Length: 393
View 1: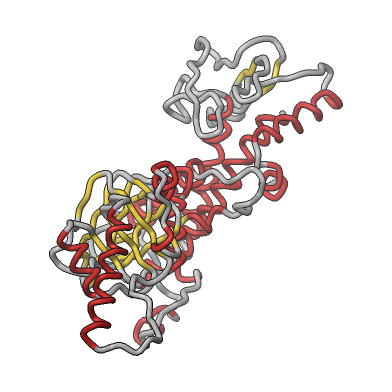
View 2 (view 1 turned 30 degrees about the vertical axis):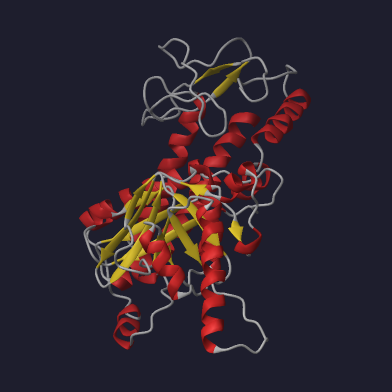
C-alpha cells in the first residue's frame, strides 16, 4: 500500500484523475465523489461512521452532497499545502474525512515510532570517530525508560509529520520521490529535549569571518558565491608595489559590484581576500567562508536565491539582480557548546527544513537521528496514502 501510494502521490491532481477514472469503471455511479479545490469538480457526500469499539472513525463515500461529519454542518474551507479542505484540528469535531484518514495515519506512525524507541539499541550508528563512543554504540543492552520513550516519541512524531505535510516536491519528478533530500537533521548534545526544534530553513556549523561582523539580521538579503573572492592573477612582470596596487583596485571594483546588490549576508564556497573581508566588515555585511557547496544549494532552495559563480559578470538590470538574492525571516549566528552555528530561519516551508535534536548523549542522538530519518519517510508515505484512499474510496 505504501509503495503504491508513494508512486501515485507525486501530483495530487493526477491522482484525482486516476481516482475518477477508476470510480467510473468500478462504482455504480460514474463521476466525481470528493470536493477537490484544485480540480474545480463538484463535491460528494462523505460520512464518517464509527469503525470499531474504540470510537475511531473512517470514511464512507455517498454521492449526494457536500463534505460533512455526522452531527455537524458543512466544514469551512481552509486550504492546506495540497489545496484540500482542512480544519484546524485533525481529530476535532469539524474534521473532514481526509483529516480522519490523516489522523489514523499519524496514529500508525506513532505505533511504529514507539516500537522502535523501545528497541533503540538495535538502531545502527555510523560516523563515530572516538573509540569510547564506538564502544558505547556497540552495547545492545541500553534501553529508554517509559517516560523517555513517551517524551522522544512525541518530539519525533511531530517533527516527522510536519516535515511530511509541509515539504512539496516538483510534480515533474525533478526533485525525486524521497523528501529526505530536503530534510536535514542536526544533533547537538547541549541543552534539553525541550530545546529540540523544527526550523523552516537551514542550520549549519560556521562563524562569521571577522568578529565585528553582524551576528543577527532581520529580513536579510543573502548572496551565495560558488567561487573565491580573490583578485585575478596575471602573468605580466611588474614591480611589487604595482602588483599590490592593481590587486587593491581589482578588489575594490569587485566589492562595488557586490555592493550594488545590497547584500547583508554573503556565503562563499572558497576563500576571501583579507581586504575584501575588511570592506565587508566596514559596511556591516556578515561573511562566512569555506561553506560547502551542498549547503549553498540548500540555502538557495530555501531562500529563493541563486549561486553566483563569477561576481565579475553580475547583471546590472534590477530584475536580474533581484533574482540572485535570497531572503528569509532572520539570520542568526549562535554559539552552542564549542561551536558556532548559523541559522537562516523563515525560508520557504515547502522547500525544505532542518530538524534539531538536543539534550542527550551523542550516541543516543545519532540513533534518534536515524530513527527520525526513517520516520520522515514513513510519515510521507502515510500522509500521501491518506490522499490516495480519499480519492479512490
